[in-house]
Every structure is written in structure tokens, then in C-alpha cells.
Length: 155
Image (cartoon, rainbow, N blue to C red):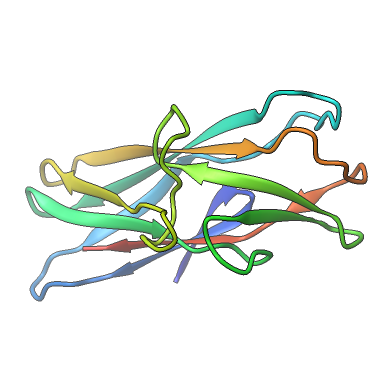
């Protein structure tokens, strides 16, 4: 297991080969998903951020998928929660595969979608964006909130 700091806390990336042979792929977080600004409980709009994940394979045209679990503080997708580090408060958030925030990123269950991709050529990094939003109007305690989401890259 390789830990990649994509932020909500840590997002762990696992590669599980689905085909035999000398194929290998590696993953990198080229930017993190961190909600850095202060959350305004009175704001009427969602707060959005973007992260980028890169996958590089040693063969041409390698199809792969990226999926995500519900995180440490949520029971089931599509819901996810950031948990207050000093108490019980939770701050709802969502991960999306689209900039328009129309497709919830997950494991393909409960209306969520996985990311299907193809590494175009050997040694070339294919990057994909993951979009995060914090729900507007959550009445939460001021402080630090965190979650850990596991991304799985299957090729």
C-alpha cells in the first residue's frame, strides 16, 4: 500500500493488477484536495476545491479504473463526512468526477461512479481531476476536520 497525500487527511492509493505480465503502473498525487479556507456556516453556496491524481504505466494503451471508498467517517456512499478532530461534529462533503459536480465519485454503488481511463503511452502520466465540495449551511464547531478516503487504481 502506498500513501499519497491528497489531503482530506491521507488518501491511500492501492494498485491491484488485473492482468498478468510485466505491466506496472505507478500513481502520484500532483495536487491535494484540501479545504483550506475558513468554513462560513452562514454562506449560502458550497465551497469547492480540486485535486489531481496521475497514473503512469510502462506499456501503451493500458486501461484502468480509479474508485474511492466512503472514507473513515461515513457509513455508505454517496455521503462522506469530515470529522471534527476534537469532538463529534461532522461536516458533510462530496467528491465528484466532473467539474460541474454532477457525478459523485465512489465505487460504483449507490449512484456513484468510478473513473475509467486509459494510459495513452508508455511513460506518459495521465492525470485526472477529483472535485470536492463542502455543503453550505452546516452548523458546526470551529476547528480542524479530517477524513481518510482510499482510492483504488485497478489495471
